[in-house]
Image 1 (cartoon, helix red, strand yellow):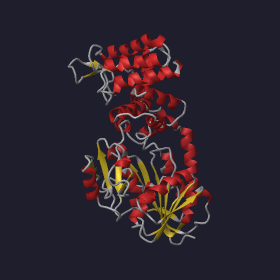
Image 2 (cartoon, helix red, strand yellow):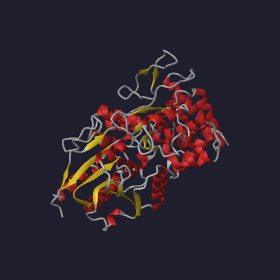
Image 3 (cartoon, one colour):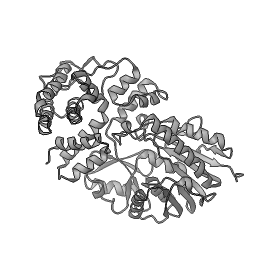
Length: 480
């Protein structure tokens, strides 16, 4: 079976039963040998349907007599695929989107409801004002929020189209339905950003993610990696002020097959994550402890920045994830990393031993939701509260690993104050021997501005990289 839409349906069915979207995608792709174009379509349909789930459900609520949650789950999934193609896939003709969705219904136990599926999707097209056109839809990739019912020009025709999606007046719900986020996440952002910036952040999070790599300066140079990739038709661009970072432009195919990967010339790591190790500023011959190390992107970066001289203890409670770190460090030919399995909150053997500690804390990942299509639906205010407790425990205990005068960097890839600012404020209130240290003298990118409090926040829509929170803390010399 090589029908991309049927494969997407099978994977989405698994997602709705609890599977992670990326795992469900891998599972279906491993069973078939698809051309690249079809693989990309399957990927887009799965991630897109999961990402836009709330908007798609709202369309079902609007056009069907039964609400989305009352529909049989498999039928709801089929309707998601149909509406997703009509609303968000510019290159798929409207007729193909409708016909293939009707066919999906027929082949998956809903042959008696094909006229219902056909009618529902065509009703959407009629409302959009373009039922007679190949690409009849009223909303483009960038939905219009402020005037959702106003004419939207179509690239095919000067006839005005209308967005059939009806939005409530409440600004939180409007943003949540239009951009497909739970209200609580919109609320968290609106408490930190104004309305316009919150919408920009929502739009950024709904883009397909870029892929960055980090060159290994112990094995190669940026120029050599650029030339090797260019020789096979892969283009990259440099990222200003990040000396090891390159960003892929366009499709890459299989990452593992690209030149230089097996040789350990480079590894995949987002630009924001690369900032963290630069802020730690490890030096040759130091003892560094990475307390939540797996899968090891930052650990291997630390080793590179230390010229692979010194000792890095890479700790993680999951041995299977540490194995991935081991594979990466072997591929990059790094010798200074030693693994340690277990919960860092239970370790007592590291007290006052480290020159520097990195606590890249487990978090809700709200800064990387473009990479994890289902993260917005998996996290809840309760899960954030639980993570905040864990983060405070980790920080309190692992701060004892640092020698007097040493440094600890706390980092997360979330944008939730309960996991960031509140964790640091609570720690400093109980720890008079610690203070925030401004990284004056470190060559960080110009756009990385510290707040008045001294911590850093990378906002994706402003810097075009993953959302991150980073703070550098120094233990005073008179600490015991």
